[in-house]
Length: 295
Image (cartoon, rainbow, N blue to C red; front, side, top):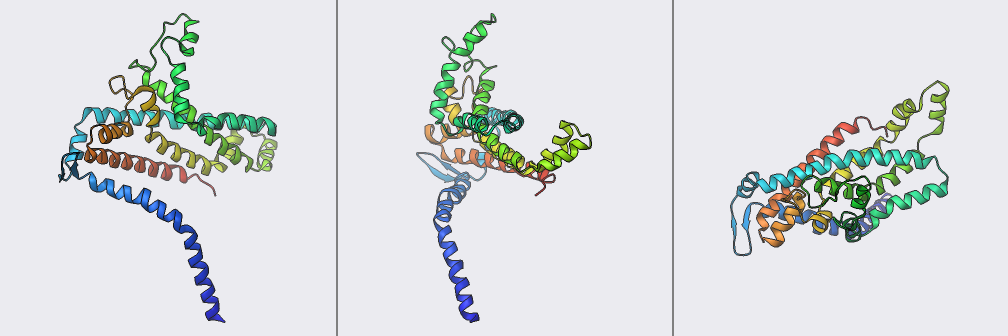
């Protein structure tokens, strides 16, 4: 009897892993293998004409490359600006929407989530019309206040903030959905008890709501950080990294280096540096915010 029971457990164990096998093969083939291959290639001078081992030379070149450092700084600025804006705005909108009727909540959730599921090409075309220096609606609105037309994507001062605004609008959809769901899991009894004891709305939010939705906030912060580090499509379609590399990001420069300049070794080194920075910052965020998480 015991032997049959062990055989049944073994068959159940095997069947479980068989169900996981397709996803595991995909993960190993399209995530793990490219990562290992990228680390390997970063130690080689790998171009269209040669392939030789050079050790850490690619990394030394990048650390002395002013364009790469500018792209890295732009990427960090995008992360620093986007993540807090997304968290604060998403939470603010979610709190407002949550108190509305179910129909209103569904409408606003769909409206805010639409840019998330829309094609980046479509979004870029719309924003290129908005930012157009001659016919753009943004310049039309600013002209009502006597401001001269601005080339938003061609001006060194305004190009990066203009891109950050586009990235922000495409990043708030999912956090709003998640925050509305998280707010629904906060027991009303806690707030009612706090209100009876004289707690203000801010005190209720600070001591009840925020700690209970911290797991959701942690997820949103880390995912938004990683996505911001991977900014590419908006840069390629709207600004092309200009003017004077003012909007260039590490991922965009990686694409140019690999597929336009055919220097796969340096491109791999860029990817490794970006991955290390993103992982390091994500670990810091997890260590800092997870101490306040209540499961």
